[in-house]
Length: 396
Figure 1 (tube, rainbow, N blue to C red):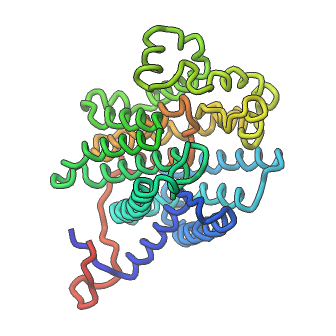
Figure 2 (cartoon, rainbow, N blue to C red; figure 1 turned 135 degrees about the vertical axis):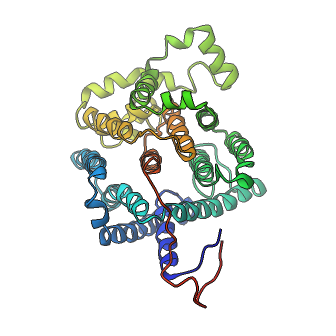
Figure 3 (spheres, rainbow, N blue to C red; figure 1 turned 90 degrees about the vertical axis):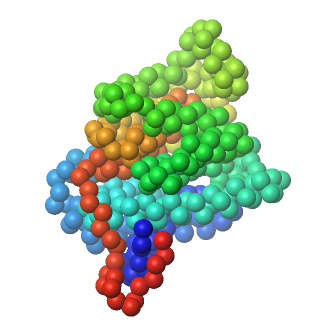
């Protein structure tokens, strides 16, 4: 495929870089430098989206999702404000999150989705290659225990989840391209190996779940690609906090100890789950702003270790319910190969939410990609120059 260098491509590449940067974390920068650089990148994306927002506003098919997203992030803002945790960075992040959907929708309507995916893939790929080389070649300097942030792009969860996103983007782009699609099984294996290397068994399980959905027969995929089944999966995984009795079942105990290689308490998570009802009863409507302090007070843990109930503890029950409604609303029927891997990614994050806090903006990003991929689409070249002119450079 020929891609020509043009002013518009350069602009969109820079904006894509700014967009992806907000989803990455570079602890070596130091907190202040990271905050300033992130806010700068957020401002770039927000400004670009606002200047083109009329393209999205005139299309009613996006109204419900965009309004619902704004309501959710407004609920988070209220919780942080009431609990005295509002800062410039928090406000900037929540504002930026409200523009994630319009930004993706805008590229879809302009016909630039393929170029956007390729930009994302290249940016993620460069960061991940540098991270992986450093953590293998210099394990004493770039290696973490899951809590210390010694990797180039954060702790083991950052590394694992970003590798999963890269995998999903690769599949979206190349599932139907024969010379690239043959590498997809290897990409899944490589992602699982990296998750194993950094000791993130949860992400290994998520990678496996994504692969199962991606390779599911069409009849099974049609069942999985329904709002009711996704909602059922969310509820089922949320109820995992009450697993203390379930864990005593021989089959469940075998899976935890032999397959996951963990103890029956799942590294102390049972203790966390037992205090959640007490914590939630104290502030059920607006939560604590951030779950880390209150959960740490009772258990010494960093969070609630369950996606849904971490939302409840952090932002309150109404906010958590809005998030689930938003996530389920993003599920749209489609037979496209790209939809299969994105739905697989959503199920992966839902399954991982049983024992980790994966209900994040990244999951919503996968959701809006799934929604837009299911729409009728015609790719348009991103160029401002005449392809027959002398001012062209082939870069892809």
